[in-house]
Structures are given as structure tokens and as C-alpha cells.
Length: 259
Image (cartoon, rainbow, N blue to C red; front, side):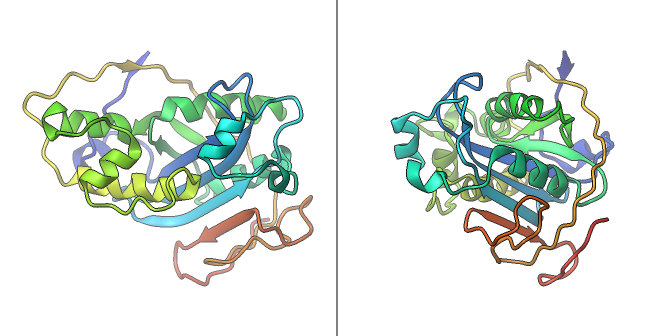
């Protein structure tokens, strides 16, 4: 058990070895990671001030051994037949892993209600030769930060992502799309960072974590801002409407190669 500091503040950054965040969000075919398939994965790399440096998104063809509920398809506004044309999970796993390491080393995992996503991700990595996750934990959970900094006196009906986004006047169009949800989460993080800690703030509880490290693989990646992924992965040789990668560390139209 490791106690995680959930404050979003400059002082917090100086005590950790990471120099960027990897925000991740999933849309799934149900609530249970041992039973339900992942349908969409999005990731955003930010600096410590939550400035976006690159983003990744892909839909996934449902895993043949896992289930997808009709309710999940409805909530996520997805169609089963469309998902049959999405990349298989192993292709997306390789793409996500390499995107997460674009900075050359792992960032700290971040998101909204992180434990839900981390449980699905842990089993996903395990299905593919136990790939070691390319991110650091303990994680930064913006959901916990919002509860801590806003508290019950905020008047919020709940601390769901859309509710907190509404509180800060953040556009919630596209909710339940993994990438749009991450953009909302990051905007909330920026707002929370400017807020002082509450005097009556509850003491953060211990969070379960795992000790992860990474191992390198080789993959050629070519990415351009706001364009559909094109012939970039070894086993994805066609343009796909189901994948999007953006890399924007230096210039919006920068193209990069990793060998």
C-alpha cells in the first residue's frame, strides 16, 4: 500500500521522478474487466502543467472471448457491426504502448476514476504476453482531486465527469467518447490546479498500486496532427477510420520516426 498525494499543485511535482502525465480513458462493453471487452482506448500525454503534447485514440474489434452488452453500445453510441472493422486488440496494444513511450520514458498514469481503467488495462496487457505497462504509478486521479478540492459544499449532485465539467463551464459535448472525456478531464485538472486546498479537506486514503517498469520494442510510427492513422503499424497496412494519433511536442505538423 502506497499513499498517493492527490493534490494538483506545483509542490507536488517536485517530489516525483516523472516529468509528464499519461492520461488514459477506456470505453468498455460492460463493467467487469474479466468479462467485458474494451471498445475504445484514448491516451493523452501532457506536461506537468497539463498542456497537451500528443494524443492517441483507437476503437477496438471486440475480443472474441469477451462480451459486449447492448447497454454499453447504447451508452457509447457504438454499433456492433462497425466495431467488426476496427483493429484487433493486439494491434491497438502495440500502438498504445509505443505512443505512451514517445517521450522516451514512462509518464505518470492519470485519468478520471483511474482504478476502473487500470483494472481493464492490467488484464489487457496480460492477454498479450504480459506486456509491462508503459506508465508510472501511483496514479493521479482527477476524480479524487475534484472530490477533495470541491467537497460537498460545491452543490454538485455527484462527481461524475460531466457534472464536474459543467461546474467549471467546460463543454461536455461528446461525453462517453474516450478521447473527448480525456480532454474534459485535463481541462478540469487545469481548473483544480488553480484552486487552494480546502481547510476541511478529508485525509486521502491509501491507494492500491503496482510496481511497473517498461521494456522497449521497435515500431515505426509516423504521426501528424488531426489526421487519420496511415500505414504506421506493422500489422495495420491500410488507412483506418478507427485510429487517430497526434504528436505535437515541437510543431503541430511534425512527423517522427522511431527505430
